[in-house]
Structure formats: structure tokens, C-alpha cells
Image (cartoon, rainbow, N blue to C red; front, side, top):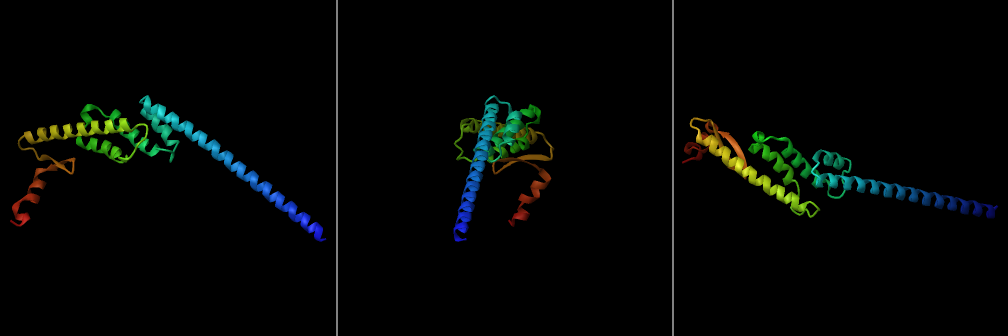
Length: 176
């Protein structure tokens, strides 16, 4: 009887080891296949970005969440899409705020393949933003009796009604 117990125990252990090895192999195969798929989709998105096909790049990046530098590339693509779909007449300081918000979410420490393109684009947008802020400020401030004043606060172009602005900075509220 003791001999049979040991044989059953040995067979059980052998069965569990084989099952465990099969399970590990199965999980490794799924992980490997998934990694290959993710890499293909990522490379497809990179090619779309290189060819400036922003809509297709966005779709590809959506299918590859949390992989490599996808989150950075998404923000770059979103900013590019914003720029692509606005006409010159729609480009206001507030509009550039949206584009800059996407670009500001990209860390300065980013060292990926598109670092130079992102840095150049960010500089271009900042330049256009400053031009827009300046020209709008001159346009609104140059017209007499306009209720709008353009003020730069923390590097942002802000439109303020003069009636609201005057009481805040008057001497009676400042305690002079």
C-alpha cells in the first residue's frame, strides 16, 4: 500500500509540473505575440508621423496605448491636428493656448526619435503665439473706446474688459 501511495504522489507531481510548464509556455507565447503586434502598430504610427498623416497616426497610436513613447507622440500629433484644421483667421491667442497645452505636456527630458521635430514645432508655435498676442494687442489697444485690453499674464495672452481691469488696479483698492 505504501508503494502505491508513492507512485500516485510521483504521478501527481509529474502532472502538476507538466501543467505548470505548459501554462508558462502558453503565457510566454501570448506575451511574445502581443509584443510583436504592439511593435508593428507602433512602427506603423511612426511611419504615419514621418509622412505627416496626422489622422492615421492618431488612430495607430490609440491602438498602442502605454507602449514606449506613445503618450508623448499622441500629444505631438494632437497639436499637429489642431494646427492643421484651423484656418489663418481662426488662429488666436486662445487657440495657441490649446496647442501649447498639448506641447507643454511633453517632458523636456524626452529623448525620442522626434525630439528635434517636437522642439522645433514648439518653438514655432511659441513664436506665432507671441506674434498673435502682440498684433491682437496692438489692434485692440489702437482702437479708441474698445472695451477689450490684451494683457500678458505668465506668458499667456489674456483678453480683459477694461471696465473690469480698472477697479482692480485703482489706488482706492490698493490702499494708497
